[in-house]
Image 1 (cartoon, rainbow, N blue to C red):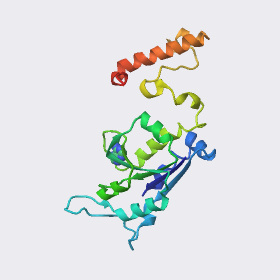
Image 2 (cartoon, protein in one colour; image 1 turned 90 degrees about the horizontal axis):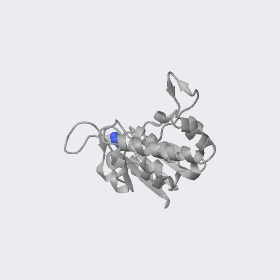
Image 3 (cartoon, rainbow, N blue to C red; image 1 turned 120 degrees about the vertical axis):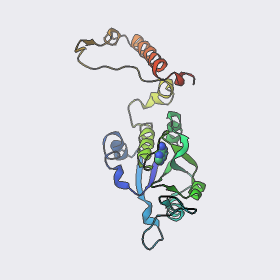
Length: 222
Ligand code: ADE
């Protein structure tokens, strides 16, 4: 998969894309991630990418030209163009699965006060990562990329189970433990030490259901 991210702040992605699982996925060529500063595409002699809103109002609005030209230079028949905005469709795990099957994602990070409405016309999908407003689309882009890359074949070990996992999409995680067996008086449940994998699977499944019922009953309605 190839992911192109259009941003005015490519340095913000340092660390998130250069460490841990995403770093390895890039090194192993499971994903190619390019950070593209769309300021490089502006025709403006002063390198402007935004301007004041027609009709008045506060703040600056991202202009069409740099983003249109940047997308035009990258887009192919296999591309899906995503705009990050709080007015987009609210992101969830099943959207992450769908996007993990795409060949090429072009992700546009908005910034400042907003973007020219006509930018919407070149996008296939608008996504919000939640009902709150961030200062820009960079953090949402990191969220999207992280959630998608971990689903790509060979990126994490559980890969073979992920796709048809009922749990991952609809249930919260079961509790996990590591050594020691007793810590400050709190014991690891006996079943996990039993070595009986059928029993362990059943225990985990039941714990997932219990936790989901308690904390996110809305997920069980699915
Ligand atoms: N840009 C600002 N806030 C956002 C959000 N919640 N989701 C996606 N993009 C955003």
